Structures are given as structure tokens and as C-alpha cells.
Amino acid sequence: MGMVDHAVRCVQAPALLKDVVSEYWAPTQPWACWEYLDQTMGIVEEISSPSEMEGSIWFQSVMKDARLRAELWPIPNRALW
Image (cartoon, rainbow, N blue to C red; front, side, top):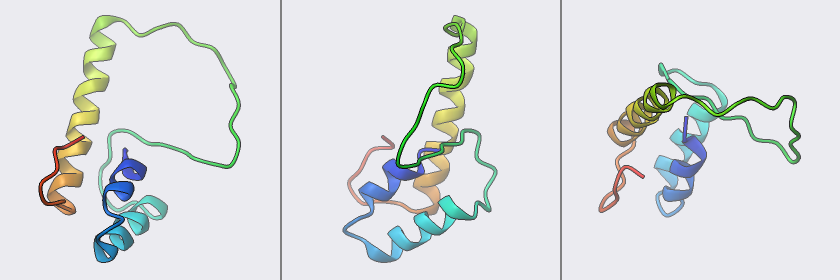
């Protein structure tokens, strides 16, 4: 869920920004990818790199969320990313 990136893109559109931030804190949509942000972060577990297939599946999920964000909160003259 690339909500933080989308929120940054909405800074000049307060109404959109409010909706994006609200969705971040209380999701109502079927997001494929989730993000968690805090003031500090730490590594809890090291994992191996994903296989090519796993990477492809992850990328498709990211793009699905990008399309949903663009549909819900379109930003004029902006690409999905």
C-alpha cells in the first residue's frame, strides 16, 4: 500500500490528502500491499531474496494498488508512480 507516496503527491490538493490519510489510518479498500511507518524501525528478521516468480507477483500487487489509488484519488498530470 503505497499510501505515503500518494499522500506526498496530494500535498497540493488538501481534500485528496485528507482522504488518502484517512484511508491509511483506517483502510476500507482491499489493498494487496501494506506499509507500516514509525519514528524508528529495526530489522526483526533477515530473509533471503525472493525468487523471480515471487518478485513478479509482488510487482503485480504493487501495480494493482497503484491503479486503485489512481482511480480513487486521481492526481492530474501524474503517472501511477
